[in-house]
Length: 360
Image 1 (cartoon, rainbow, N blue to C red):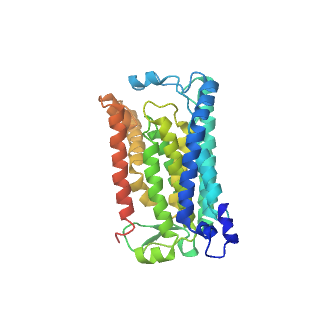
Image 2 (cartoon, rainbow, N blue to C red):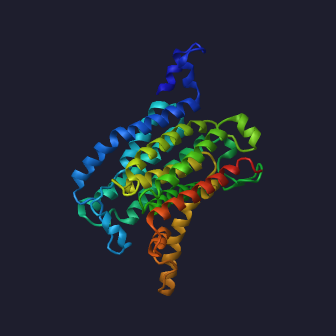
Image 3 (cartoon, helix red, strand yellow):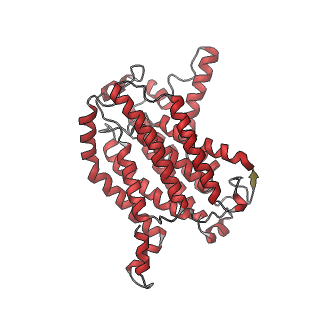
């Protein structure tokens, strides 16, 4: 919205600053951060009052989680509210990729909100049926995949870009749409599975989003893509503003979610943010790089898949409990140790993901 102040500029005044994506990204970050600090405590007070007993705690989970009974959930409203407000304020609203990531974020967030509401209203850990959640997520992802493909350059439509390999594209044709759907839905559910400890999911999401934001900015500039030998996707640079807002909103939320958490993200936040990461990867043609940058989420999801399949086949478990962060809890690791070490792993994976821009 503020971008249109450039219409008042003669090229040498303060209004000219709003032409620059980096300047507006900084503004989006600060706006989302202030939003989180201003509305965080009032929102938590409202959630605590309306939810009563807070998020239901599973009896079959780690024993230490029983002490968290009464903590309100739906804290994702704070993150989503901050990033949507900041993005609408600072991004160019004539950019289709901005609306793509906003659509996916809000839509998956709505599914998560319905799930959280069902859990707290019934005081039962089972919310919206899994098949319904998955079906709605697929419908959203179908729309997003077609949307992204429509606005990709003709030479990139239906193509899968391979990281590291210079100018290599794999023509998936119409199979690209199902592939993109899997990326978006998979990312949403992988982040959802990771959200099991105070602060565990939000920092890796912020790290992954920041990395994808840098990638989006790079692939949206023709001079950068020529230098780095990556594929140019016009318009994706504006996604940096969304990711900056996500980082600011995430910090504002982490202020209240740091152990011991005053509020949980809930499915409202985890599904929204995971879906956003998937949508950004699809928009920038860096779907495979997301698997590296978000490697922690991939491992968390795979630990659940392996556990379920192995248990059905043998009646035994590979892990003491899945997702894998619960396995380490069962082994006696302190919650803070698990969280910080997983943050470190996320940062390392992000650096590897960024390196794919230059390693060709």
